[in-house]
Amino acid sequence: MRVLLLGGTTEASLIGRELATAGIAGVYSYAGRTATPVAQPLRTRVGGFGGVDGLAEYLRHEEITHVIDATHPFAGQISRNAVDACAKTNTPLIAYLREPWVEGPGDKWQRVATLADAAAALPDHPARIFLAIGRQHLAPFAAQPRHFYLLRLVDAPVALPLPDAEIVLARGPFTIEGDLALLRDHRITHIVARNAGGEGAKAKLDAARMLGLPVIMIDRPGLPARRTAQNVGEIMRWLTQSACLGV
Ligand code: NAP
Image 1 (cartoon, rainbow, N blue to C red):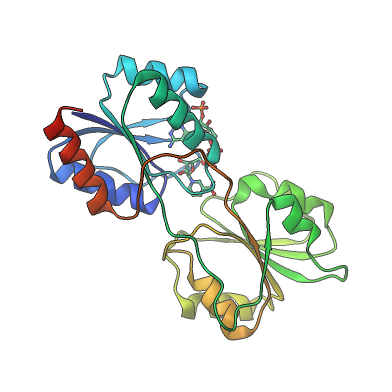
Image 2: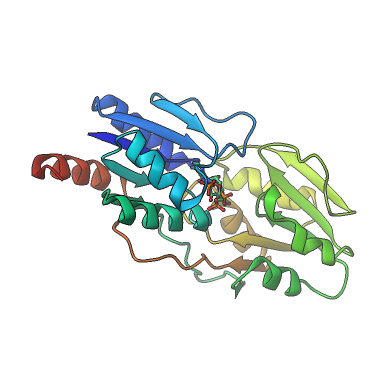
């Protein structure tokens, strides 16, 4: 068995650790977005494969027997590529899928489909926005320069398309106490978030509820049907069963 683990998330690191502990040969793949990626106990490669064909070629060349897609729920392109490349090469694929967050009592969510819709949903008057969306996705908000934007990023961007913005450099998981202080200290009036799910970035939603702040929540991109699991144990069982069946 030889596993390709498409990573870049906390859960992928957990899966990588399980694979290493179980003595399963695996390659952990990073896209190369952050300057200081978390070290992995598996062989690690960095950078795109070159689309579906590049990924299919990689699977063949590296004699990969199984692919685990543990990328972020909003990393839609690589997940679509994995489905197509695995179909092309007849490689079994499983995706780790975090449960999306669900609006509860006291939440003030406005759900939108895209980043552009989120930018359009901001108020007409100048407001103070916590943009919890990652540095690659700021462009649509450049069209709304009247607001102050707070950004929480892993790496500082080279240039910001937003005239009035402040950057906090931090890596999750985050706490409710910390996020309450962040929102209060910056006098935030609105939050823009993507429905990533999971525990590591949920604190901002709990803090928003406690402060009565509106959240503009961007829904996940649609993805093709594929086998999914919601915890690491399920993925390890699938690998073991596949190995027993000689798949
Ligand atoms: P994306 O839009 O789905 O992917 C764009 C391209 O980046 C892919 O076509 C692929 O290039 C390359 N790529 C993406 N993930 C890769 C991986 N794990 N290994 C090798 N190549 C990869 O992805 P994204 O939203 O830019 O996210 C990039 C990475 O950051 C992912 O690993 C994801 O798990 C992580 N991440 C993303 C977010 C987010 O908000 N999107 C948040 C946290 C972490 P080729 O076509 O050339 O193969």
